[in-house]
Length: 156
Image 1 (cartoon, rainbow, N blue to C red):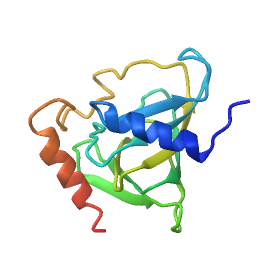
Image 2: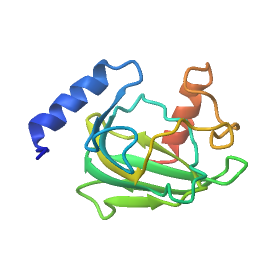
Image 3: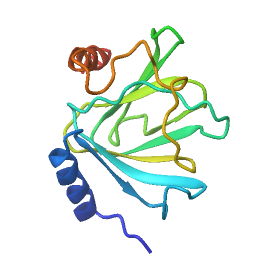
């Protein structure tokens, strides 16, 4: 049995803060080939997760907040924000299910944010058709300003 306790959450957060991408997964599923992926995802506020979609009709993606605050954004095919929601364990909204084919991203709105993520496996890298080509790549010069614009969608 894998136990998820506050000590584990603190360890994952510490790992995320040390990671150059400012996020860290803690997989519950045994390996990338497993048919059901379940994981904790620690993400810090300066971590940029490029908008993307999953074209496999079996790869709907579910997020449930564990701690912190997570902003979820969805986009149309041209990159216009369609919907936003804040997941907050102290608030009204605790989770979101994102259907396959819908462009989306998540932004950490508070240090120490961790969410539970579930989707179908196996792991496959995103194809070019799944990447939001209208958004900057993670390591590009425009990523920081784009992340700031995404966060501005959540006037906290």
